[in-house]
Length: 113
Image (cartoon, rainbow, N blue to C red; front, side):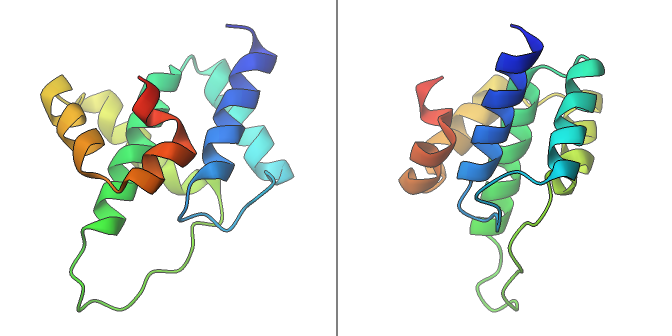
């Protein structure tokens, strides 16, 4: 995949997430996406981080105070690092995909995998 394709796909996925405030990527988001490409981080790892974050946000304690929208791609860096250190079991990833709100899957393209 070319750099341009990677950046477009990543930024489109990010901006399509329902818990993000961004509808267009910021300059910092673009820079970070380029850095992720330069680091050789596969899109499937980033998509898994998106999915894990959305699942954690969606299925958190309903009594907890509401979370603010995600305002930066940098929000996902700790999850990307977590998944790189301890990859998600494919079965668990399938479980997350099946249990996250259908609206989330439509917006991220994760249902197409």
